[in-house]
Image (cartoon, rainbow over all chains, first blue to last red; front, side, top):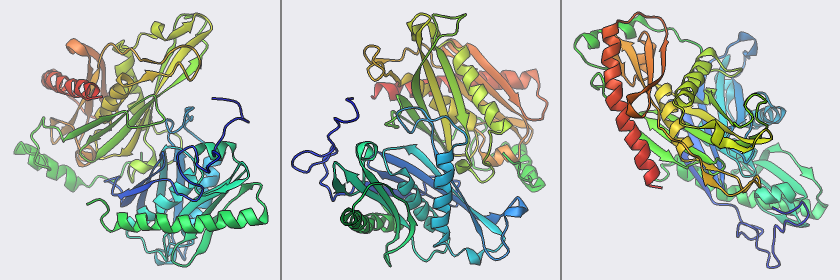
Length: 238
Length: 263
């Protein structure tokens, strides 16, 4: 590994380190039923990302103070397994995973018909088994499939994807090097049937034109990923 | 883990079956569920394994760190084994700090591996008194349908035996296989309906009594024992399951050896 400055993420022909062009999505594969004891589950591999989501419920909400009289609460946990990254992650409390759990819950609450299950709880567990880049996006997407697999009523599934910028070039679906050495990251949670958004974050530096380009890449990528989500739920590889 | 109310009906049902020498899923007393073992399945780990026993699924991953040897043992590295059952694995596993059950699991698995002496901590020394390898073995439950102990034990030793020391990444020499000289294997027996059965599933765990975990090394040497939960057992009962454990451990050890040869 060289220093910070000499990682060339895109060559002169516009080919990225993993062989993609700037508008390509990493290979995506989804399967359901991977946690047999859960009410619904999904595994998503996306590039080197390997994410498992499991759904339990609707079930009794306890402690009672978390109950809501008019709707179900979504209890979402995003966690990275200790062996999911190059340097081991210490198990336990972590500010990053807390924040991601929170924004994921809020994205999913926007589509789940929680008012159908007052005073109950739906548990959504997202475990990152192997991380490349964009694990929060993979987590939200896998959790949407797991909720659908559990038969939880939703207005739409959420497809989440992050585009960004590296060496001043806007690229679709950032990989690990682009995430580490790039200049911007724009993760979005998109409802594929309407093009509406339920999740949005961004950090870095984008001009108005670059921002629009990254936005458009995400919209196109969401369609590709949505096809795989539907395929998995309709029987997948069988 | 929160203990769900155990319907007395389940206990009674399991006891009735036991009286006819049957199990609720049709298995014989010492019959195992199908076991799948896959090694090197986690790209970011230096060694890894995935084990499936029925609907119980676990992963184990090995990572390495550089540590400063302890002053009283300047020529030795370290081995750390940690087991986690996160709420993804079942509706009764809760979030928060590790429960007593989950800590017991980790410690029993750790003892079986550590006490077998399969890893010589002196081999992990890089520069005496300055640098040594710390081997960290993390075992992780994906789905708990009973007998996590055996699944954890099998995944743990298979992951260790598949591990490569990442010396090049840490710039301390060339990558090499981790030297693991023995293959300790755990077998667990649960008292269900008044007699011990092998490889209990979740229902048998919930409707059963005490459990005994036996870890045997090569040549049938005993490396760890643990009795868990409330219950009384006799010397004759122990002798019977200990004898059963010998043949089952040998079968599982062959399975690990075959998986590694297939690499």
